[in-house]
Length: 155
Image 1: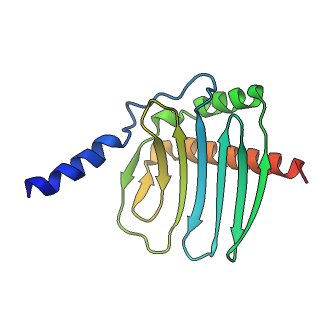
Image 2: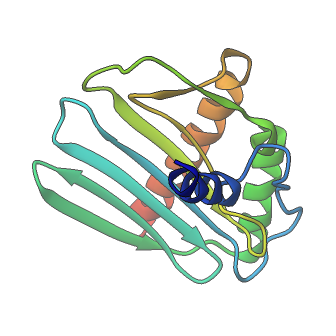
Image 3: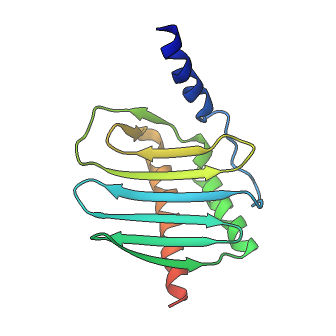
């Protein structure tokens, strides 16, 4: 039993708790933000990838990907970070919930090494705590709209 608990403890320690992640004030080369929306009853998903030198918006519907690349300037990246600070993204907390079948997942991840990866999600077995939902969905929708608008500019 003891040997079974050790890997679980290692996994839990490698996941970022809400208290040890600090959202950077300015954009650094290794900073990456990802968004995901998918699952549930619909055969579709949305993926967004934002970094200093590459951004991508991918919409999958009925198994077909529509991928669009876009670029954000250093000023836009820092404005994006300021907006995430306004939404208190690094304070958002989640909690487990009873299984909800066919529930869509919304995930926002921030990779800012050397910190542990920081992901906030709501889905079939986890939810954003009620007092943080406005900030989570505000940040999530802001990033999605930014990616959609910027990816359309290349059309």
